Image 1: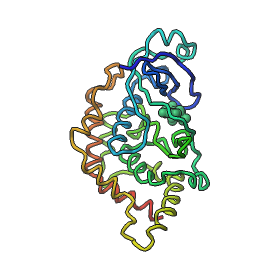
Image 2 (image 1 turned 180 degrees about the vertical axis):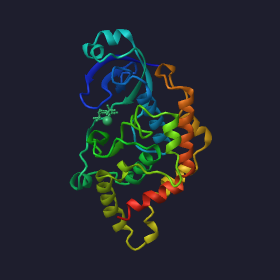
Image 3 (image 1 turned 90 degrees about the vertical axis):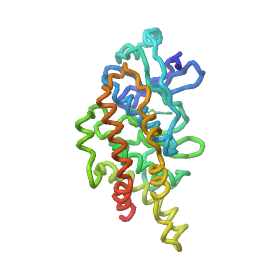
Image 4 (image 1 turned 135 degrees about the horizontal axis):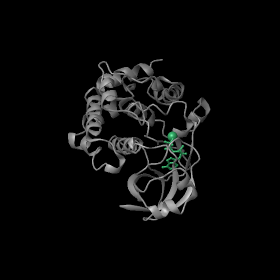
Length: 272
Ligand SMILES: Nc1ncnc2c1ncn2[C@@H]1O[C@H](COP(=O)(O)OP(=O)(O)O)[C@@H](O)[C@H]1O
Ligand SMILES: [Mg+2]
């Protein structure tokens, strides 16, 4: 298991007190751990599950690890002590150089990988990520390539750190529920830019205007084992009960089984 060696910087943004650290592989990571603001470990569970699902559908997101934060490192840092960080397993997201993106018609023009938009929307809709619209911190733009990537999966399952078996069961709906956030302004601005670039290119061929067909196919081809692996080896120290973990897996399976219906709803956003 990777070990956290030094604390380099408190990020001073975000609600989970993320920090930049260097680990035993000499790489830098953004760390999220259990502290006075992240008491249950569900935010860390959400991050791991979200990152693994993103990798399955080839959505650009930083590489992740589960590492160990030791008592020694905590005691060496005034900040970590102040925020009540607990020793033990923590979530690590490989540090990438980039900046938060305030989404607007102007900034959207400079995104080099606009084709990410439908996939990102499906990802947020399937996992019910309620914390991207209106939060520039969770739209992340890589510095050199100007690529938009997905970060911060701590607020999936609609309720961030307070979802449970019951809330997830209630969210398993037919027709599927698309959370309001996904109908928000940031997404619509990116959809408009996507349509400008892609639809113009295929103007003569209306059949190309199915933005979700590739990601839909990918999701339908996922195997049961691949889904299961998104939930494997969650540290017991994060205190997410087996019952809740099972419910989260069932919820994701439900969403995947109804992917055609979800996509049908999402297509309406492209028709505005
Ligand atoms: N892998 C990463 N590489 C570089 N910066 C990151 C990475 N992950 C997060 N950040 C930066 O840290 C900030 C806070 O991280 P985030 O995951 O959004 O935490 P929170 O859950 O507290 O909102 C982000 O807005 C971003 O600027
Ligand atoms: Mg955030």
